[in-house]
Length: 181
Ligand code: ATP
Ligand code: MG
Image 1 (spheres, rainbow, N blue to C red):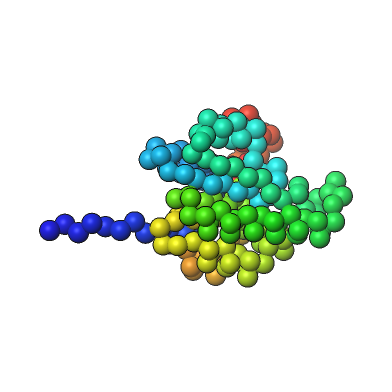
Image 2: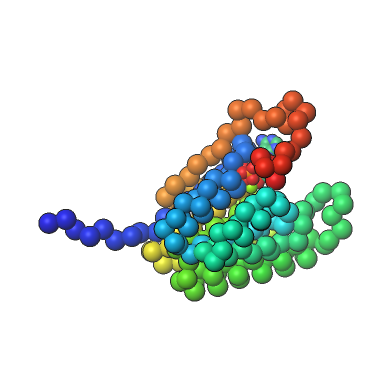
Protein backbone atom coordinates (compact mmCIF):
# COMPACT_ATOMS: atom_id res chain seq x y z
CA UNK A 1 0.00 0.00 0.00
CA UNK A 2 1.39 3.35 -1.00
CA UNK A 3 2.00 5.58 1.97
CA UNK A 4 0.91 9.15 1.77
CA UNK A 5 4.01 11.28 1.74
CA UNK A 6 4.05 14.21 4.12
CA UNK A 7 5.05 17.54 2.73
CA UNK A 8 8.29 18.60 4.30
CA UNK A 9 9.42 22.19 3.95
CA UNK A 10 12.88 22.91 2.63
CA UNK A 11 15.51 25.52 3.33
CA UNK A 12 16.81 26.74 -0.01
CA UNK A 13 19.75 29.06 -0.64
CA UNK A 14 20.71 30.80 -3.88
CA UNK A 15 24.11 32.41 -3.59
CA UNK A 16 27.29 33.14 -5.56
CA UNK A 17 28.68 35.94 -7.67
CA UNK A 18 26.91 35.19 -10.95
CA UNK A 19 23.64 36.67 -12.10
CA UNK A 20 20.39 34.81 -11.54
CA UNK A 21 19.73 34.48 -7.81
CA UNK A 22 16.79 36.82 -7.54
CA UNK A 23 15.38 35.80 -10.93
CA UNK A 24 15.54 32.14 -9.90
CA UNK A 25 13.60 33.04 -6.75
CA UNK A 26 11.01 34.83 -8.88
CA UNK A 27 10.81 31.76 -11.11
CA UNK A 28 10.04 29.61 -8.10
CA UNK A 29 7.32 32.09 -7.19
CA UNK A 30 5.70 31.64 -10.60
CA UNK A 31 5.83 27.86 -10.24
CA UNK A 32 4.36 27.96 -6.74
CA UNK A 33 1.52 30.25 -7.84
CA UNK A 34 0.64 27.51 -10.32
CA UNK A 35 -0.37 25.41 -7.30
CA UNK A 36 -2.17 28.35 -5.74
CA UNK A 37 0.38 28.66 -2.95
CA UNK A 38 0.63 31.78 -0.84
CA UNK A 39 4.04 33.34 -1.05
CA UNK A 40 5.63 36.13 0.94
CA UNK A 41 8.60 37.95 -0.53
CA UNK A 42 10.67 40.20 1.66
CA UNK A 43 13.39 42.31 0.11
CA UNK A 44 16.19 43.16 2.51
CA UNK A 45 18.25 45.55 0.44
CA UNK A 46 16.09 48.36 -0.88
CA UNK A 47 16.60 48.97 -4.57
CA UNK A 48 17.55 45.37 -5.29
CA UNK A 49 14.12 44.83 -6.83
CA UNK A 50 13.49 46.68 -10.02
CA UNK A 51 10.48 48.02 -11.87
CA UNK A 52 10.11 44.85 -13.98
CA UNK A 53 9.75 42.42 -11.12
CA UNK A 54 7.74 44.78 -8.95
CA UNK A 55 5.20 45.25 -11.76
CA UNK A 56 5.34 41.57 -12.76
CA UNK A 57 4.67 40.44 -9.19
CA UNK A 58 1.54 42.59 -9.06
CA UNK A 59 0.10 40.23 -11.67
CA UNK A 60 0.56 37.34 -9.27
CA UNK A 61 -1.73 38.92 -6.68
CA UNK A 62 -3.34 37.80 -4.44
CA UNK A 63 -0.97 34.83 -4.10
CA UNK A 64 2.16 36.90 -3.68
CA UNK A 65 2.66 39.41 -0.90
CA UNK A 66 5.57 41.78 -1.25
CA UNK A 67 7.50 43.78 1.34
CA UNK A 68 10.43 46.09 0.92
CA UNK A 69 12.49 46.68 4.03
CA UNK A 70 15.92 48.19 4.32
CA UNK A 71 16.99 51.68 3.67
CA UNK A 72 19.01 51.92 0.51
CA UNK A 73 22.56 50.87 -0.10
CA UNK A 74 25.09 50.87 2.65
CA UNK A 75 28.57 52.21 2.26
CA UNK A 76 28.37 53.78 -1.17
CA UNK A 77 29.23 57.41 -1.76
CA UNK A 78 25.77 58.94 -1.81
CA UNK A 79 24.72 56.99 1.22
CA UNK A 80 23.93 59.68 3.73
CA UNK A 81 22.11 57.45 6.17
CA UNK A 82 23.76 56.46 9.33
CA UNK A 83 24.67 52.77 9.75
CA UNK A 84 22.36 52.56 12.77
CA UNK A 85 19.42 53.62 10.61
CA UNK A 86 20.18 50.85 8.14
CA UNK A 87 20.52 48.40 10.96
CA UNK A 88 17.22 49.44 12.48
CA UNK A 89 15.46 49.01 9.14
CA UNK A 90 17.02 45.59 8.65
CA UNK A 91 15.92 44.56 12.12
CA UNK A 92 12.38 45.57 11.29
CA UNK A 93 12.80 43.20 8.34
CA UNK A 94 13.87 40.45 10.70
CA UNK A 95 10.79 41.00 12.88
CA UNK A 96 8.54 41.09 9.82
CA UNK A 97 10.07 37.85 8.51
CA UNK A 98 9.47 36.11 11.84
CA UNK A 99 5.89 37.39 11.96
CA UNK A 100 5.14 36.27 8.41
CA UNK A 101 6.69 32.83 8.91
CA UNK A 102 4.95 32.34 12.27
CA UNK A 103 1.59 33.28 10.77
CA UNK A 104 1.64 29.95 8.95
CA UNK A 105 -0.14 31.62 6.05
CA UNK A 106 2.63 31.03 3.52
CA UNK A 107 3.91 27.87 1.93
CA UNK A 108 6.90 29.77 0.64
CA UNK A 109 8.73 32.72 2.19
CA UNK A 110 11.52 34.32 0.18
CA UNK A 111 14.06 36.53 1.92
CA UNK A 112 15.83 38.25 -0.93
CA UNK A 113 19.37 39.53 -0.28
CA UNK A 114 19.29 38.48 3.36
CA UNK A 115 22.81 37.09 2.89
CA UNK A 116 23.98 40.52 1.77
CA UNK A 117 22.32 42.18 4.76
CA UNK A 118 24.23 39.77 6.98
CA UNK A 119 27.54 40.38 5.25
CA UNK A 120 27.05 44.12 5.71
CA UNK A 121 26.48 43.58 9.43
CA UNK A 122 22.86 44.74 9.27
CA UNK A 123 21.52 41.37 10.40
CA UNK A 124 23.36 39.11 12.84
CA UNK A 125 23.70 35.35 12.67
CA UNK A 126 21.55 35.12 15.81
CA UNK A 127 18.79 37.08 14.10
CA UNK A 128 18.98 34.85 11.04
CA UNK A 129 18.77 31.80 13.27
CA UNK A 130 15.64 33.21 14.90
CA UNK A 131 14.10 33.55 11.46
CA UNK A 132 14.96 29.94 10.65
CA UNK A 133 13.51 28.78 13.97
CA UNK A 134 10.19 30.55 13.29
CA UNK A 135 9.03 28.08 10.65
CA UNK A 136 7.53 24.65 10.99
CA UNK A 137 8.24 21.57 8.92
CA UNK A 138 5.61 22.39 6.32
CA UNK A 139 7.02 25.72 5.19
CA UNK A 140 9.61 26.42 2.55
CA UNK A 141 12.13 29.17 3.06
CA UNK A 142 14.31 30.57 0.32
CA UNK A 143 17.22 32.88 1.10
CA UNK A 144 19.10 34.67 -1.67
CA UNK A 145 22.18 36.82 -1.95
CA UNK A 146 25.86 36.45 -2.64
CA UNK A 147 28.07 35.51 0.28
CA UNK A 148 25.89 32.94 2.07
CA UNK A 149 27.64 32.11 5.37
CA UNK A 150 29.11 28.63 5.77
CA UNK A 151 26.78 27.71 8.64
CA UNK A 152 23.73 28.48 6.49
CA UNK A 153 25.10 26.40 3.62
CA UNK A 154 25.55 23.51 6.03
CA UNK A 155 22.06 23.82 7.39
CA UNK A 156 20.28 24.24 4.04
CA UNK A 157 18.65 21.41 2.12
CA UNK A 158 19.42 22.95 -1.24
CA UNK A 159 22.22 25.33 -2.12
CA UNK A 160 22.86 26.63 -5.61
CA UNK A 161 25.87 28.80 -6.27
CA UNK A 162 25.55 31.01 -9.33
CA UNK A 163 28.98 31.24 -10.91
CA UNK A 164 29.78 33.98 -13.34
CA UNK A 165 31.06 32.57 -16.60
CA UNK A 166 30.37 35.67 -18.69
CA UNK A 167 28.49 38.87 -18.07
CA UNK A 168 27.78 41.61 -20.64
CA UNK A 169 29.06 44.08 -18.05
CA UNK A 170 32.57 42.82 -18.82
CA UNK A 171 32.14 44.12 -22.39
CA UNK A 172 30.90 47.43 -21.12
CA UNK A 173 27.23 46.61 -21.82
CA UNK A 174 25.12 48.19 -19.14
CA UNK A 175 22.03 46.82 -17.41
CA UNK A 176 19.15 46.06 -19.75
CA UNK A 177 15.41 46.50 -19.39
CA UNK A 178 13.63 43.15 -19.04
CA UNK A 179 16.92 41.38 -18.37
CA UNK A 180 18.40 43.22 -15.42
CA UNK A 181 15.58 45.46 -14.22
P1 ATP B 1 19.23 38.99 -10.86
O1 ATP B 1 18.41 39.96 -10.05
O2 ATP B 1 19.43 39.49 -12.25
O3 ATP B 1 18.75 37.58 -10.76
P2 ATP B 1 21.19 38.45 -8.83
O4 ATP B 1 20.07 38.46 -7.85
O5 ATP B 1 21.89 37.15 -9.03
O6 ATP B 1 20.70 39.00 -10.23
P3 ATP B 1 22.49 40.53 -7.34
O7 ATP B 1 23.74 40.22 -6.63
O8 ATP B 1 21.25 40.67 -6.53
O9 ATP B 1 22.31 39.48 -8.51
O10 ATP B 1 22.74 41.83 -8.22
C1 ATP B 1 21.69 42.61 -8.68
C2 ATP B 1 21.99 43.31 -9.98
O11 ATP B 1 23.36 43.22 -10.37
C3 ATP B 1 21.22 42.71 -11.14
O12 ATP B 1 20.67 43.76 -11.88
C4 ATP B 1 22.20 41.97 -11.96
O13 ATP B 1 21.95 42.02 -13.35
C5 ATP B 1 23.50 42.63 -11.64
N1 ATP B 1 24.53 41.59 -11.59
C6 ATP B 1 24.39 40.37 -11.06
N2 ATP B 1 25.52 39.65 -11.21
C7 ATP B 1 26.38 40.45 -11.86
C8 ATP B 1 27.72 40.30 -12.31
N3 ATP B 1 28.36 39.15 -12.12
N4 ATP B 1 28.31 41.35 -12.96
C9 ATP B 1 27.64 42.51 -13.14
N5 ATP B 1 26.38 42.73 -12.73
C10 ATP B 1 25.75 41.71 -12.10
MG1 MG C 1 19.55 39.56 -6.23
